[in-house]
Length: 300
Image (cartoon, rainbow, N blue to C red; front, top):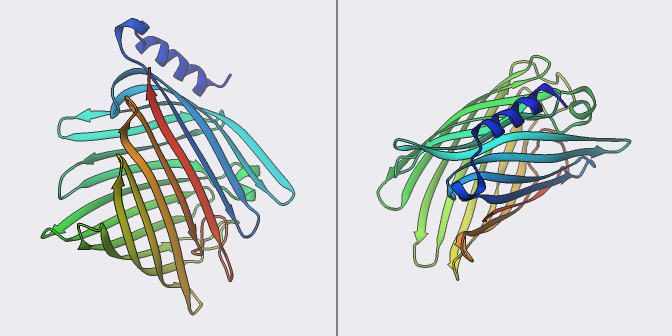
């Protein structure tokens, strides 16, 4: 047992209460992705919510199995996290912190709800590439997001981030989104999504690091509530440009089905997506990336 795992178990035991003293719950989450170059990532996890006051106020343990595969290579690992969510005054937080026996991993967000939403976020994970899996290469991403509403129908969102890769490359991120509601009754809106990043050390390893990348997408969004469920579909098209190359078409499709509360507290979220924009593993002509994620929770 690694030192990280031992410390997490000790902390959980130290903070724990008898089952009768506090409501508990179970959670689950999974992720699967695959690209046109044969790289796939699969993660499946389960959480024990040792203290559950509400869906957004709980803490517990999260165990996860991750697997990275490609042509001629296959790497799997077990992970253990201390995970939870809660409130800090007018702020809310959620996240997990743990490790895989090799280094610390996790993600977290601290945010303030309201028309002008502010969010700070941090994540650290293994690079889902051949060298990332076989050589233990990681990325750490720190950022800030801010919403600026203009009237009832128009909202601007900005994101600024900094990303550090094993090997010395550091990446600066800027993203901007303009969202316009076209019909509240039909749940139809449109977005202009822009993204830019620059690498300090391009082509340092086997992940996509072109030096500079820019992208702009126009999207159509449909969102409705159906019998307590929320459904959302996003279709987008635009252009991207990689340093040293010309403009290329960019497309995406996203789907979401979720419920805030259903069947006495059962919650779930299903996400599906497709894009031809470059991802961490690779990028180039005829590149395609698709993913599916499923997560939920159930009070006991």
